[in-house]
Length: 59
Image (cartoon, rainbow, N blue to C red; front, side, top):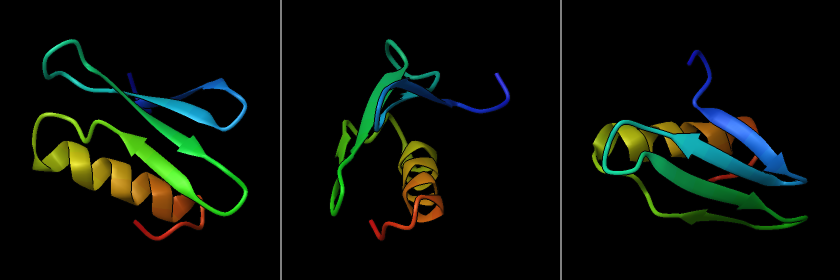
């Protein structure tokens, strides 16, 4: 999979990774964002933080 982020509903993104069952989520609101489960290792957390920054949010 080239992009591990998939928009599954308006403002809700699934993050696919290789650890455990391989799924985390990010929910983007108008002013805030919530990351649900940071993944299994540092690289997962860094990927999610980079995604938030690309969306104009600071983790």
